Amino acid sequence: MLAEEYFNLYRMCVDVQSIQFTLKDFKRFMQSTNIKVIKETNCVAILGLADSEIEIYFIGVEKKFRGKGLGKNLLKNVISFSKDYGASTIVLEVGVNNRPAKNTYLSLNFKECGVRKNYYSIRPGFRQDAIIMKLNLET
Image 1 (tube, rainbow, N blue to C red):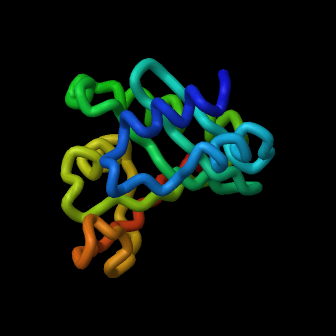
Image 2 (cartoon, rainbow, N blue to C red):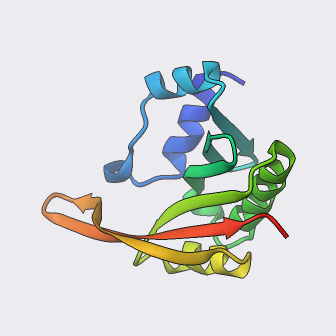
């Protein structure tokens, strides 16, 4: 798949003011051995790969397809990929006000492990804390 296609799907999954990645970033992602982009129908995840840890940089579902379980299914596939990769943990941040995402993470046994104050810029002059969540893959 072309970087442009990934980027266009990403843009469909995020509010305009929250766009953090550019087309140039996606072109770089496609060539990187430390970043994995997982695309499924109407959703996408961007993962940072380290020796024993996967960091979810972004996971999103197109707005008109939210609430149908696509994000949870994608997250399950991220977990499966992470186990196959040999990672022992998955780490992510989620906005404190993003209840649907937080509930999905909790339902798949992610645990809250910290807070990043004023982490997300929601709109000019308004910031939101991020909850750091972690999933231990070792049993």
